[in-house]
Length: 351
Image 1 (tube, one colour):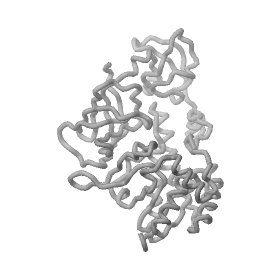
Image 2: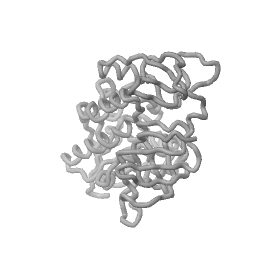
Image 3: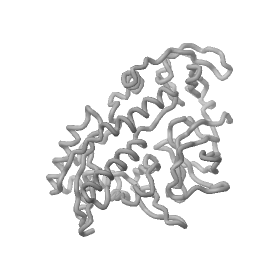
Image 4: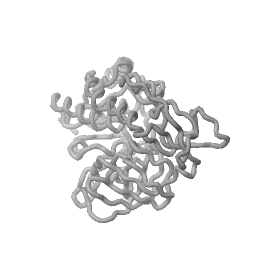
């Protein structure tokens, strides 16, 4: 695309590095941008990205988004945990930092597009030709974590890796001797590298989680817990109490500081309600729609029926789903395209 400028969010990893290289080969004027979002993790990523940018011959900038990241992502993450929900901070980061904040900087640089190394395809589909995402066919699909992007954001987004698989991306990086070709993928939340979410939240909020009661479905006390932010729906390990049989967290009740425990079958639900709905492949609709729904990143989409009730979306799955978790995302597809998605608010207590 001669004379078109694209700002590529370069994390210092192999995916965004190959995305930048591919776009340059396609004729774009490419600018690399590393987003500094947290106090402890910026310099190494920026150095790796700078090495890649030098290797492929593009300018590179480090952009300070720490204030926006704290407000939009970290503060929201802590508040959700304190409210007994389990948030997905990557979804908030994608919309508010990797897109909203990066687009603002791209505008300042006079760029036409932004690009990332995500595995999904930006396209237009449906009667109104709305912008949406199609699942990547290459074995790694990240559309679930991107369901919250807006129409204006999608209209200016390029994802050149959408039909590639991870081995193909690494081979491409090695072929061009990119210095990050063999760099391992990051698996943790960037601001909680030790995965101790409870300690992070307690430190961030300066609030100490209060011990309370484990209770059964009958309301009887089963023991003491160390604070609701230490638990999530479906959790079995780390309860700190022996029951003589596997027991799982089936509900978290912040109003009474109780954590409800039950057997595995107690985690099965057919219905959920989601709020803060983002419409991607479809506009707000009336009546019932058949779709395929995901309630976690690695889940295979399951058959379901969805309809709107005011500003909330209600979903009924054909088959019960395990561990429907308030705070997580519910994302709905048809023919591999994202229709819409939202944040799980509550689950119905039916088997």
